[in-house]
Image (cartoon, rainbow, N blue to C red; front, side, top):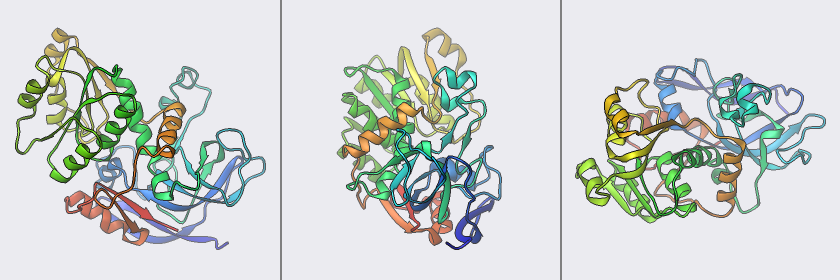
Length: 348
């Protein structure tokens, strides 16, 4: 194996380029994954712009990925304890927790005091190879492509957000934003039997996808006033709102759209800070939850949904491009000139 590999490196705001970098050296318990596919996450777009405090250049991003194990360390075992073997196709949970701190012991490994995320705190999957703890790897069944396998991570984020909404099947959910996370929240909600799901966006094509995926109502906010429309659909307010955008406007709308005593889940990370109507929140007893990452249980739930066919590929929402076109893909996503909702970089 060559000691150098092709890598897409983020060098600073709006600057990415292909470079030859060393193949990662494995630590005990790790495997080397030859990346087949790696998705571009919305949080990476803010990182690309220099607006994400977690990411520091130079950095190899990429935390949504799948591929084939190319090398293993002695005794390396997968998430279920079975031995890791060269040649196995896997996806992986990129969130590394210590397992010992108070948050880990309280089953909040996503909030680990020492957490590290592949593609943020250590080199990620926008590269020919990535080093991953074997215990975070999940073998892919033959019918699941690398591209679909790479969607486990964003789907896991959405599974967690929906679980934090604490809804019963007969209740109503409003999702703000029909990007990948918003659409995947729709998938996760429908899988729980929640049928009254409304979703909003400015893109007609994304809203059409949402309709096909089971949204009861898809609201084009360029054409219809969001809050007025929600009041028509649910006169007392919706039982829960998930904001998958994270803008000042959507955070404010989420608070106004929910029923008194309802719950708002913030997962979108667009704006670093946002003003909220605090007195209104207090007087209406609105609960607010942040949703970050996922637990192992959320990741396993997402993986099960994918293996069961909950998400199907489609040229109208999922686009594949070679890694060498990654810099252009980032630029086009930021500019809003991409037709697809999700871009996955083909690496292998």
